Length: 87
Image (cartoon, rainbow, N blue to C red; front, side, top):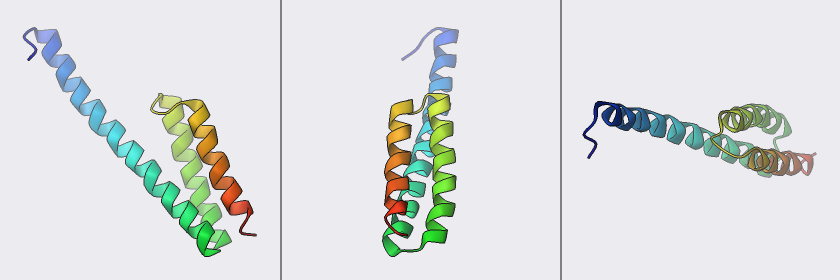
């Protein structure tokens, strides 16, 4: 366990950041499932709206360094391709 004052602060900061990152990743996973689910159901309007939210969340995560920018591009590309096959 940390003994120095600064090390204790780092432990607190890590705990907060870990929880924040976990929440953001969960949101991305949920939005991805919604988007792909709407595409699989054939609901183009709901899928496109969901894709917009999903893309925004992925871009923000990549900007913050939560996920790599290439992974963000791959996720968005696969979702867009799934929606393109609907219509």
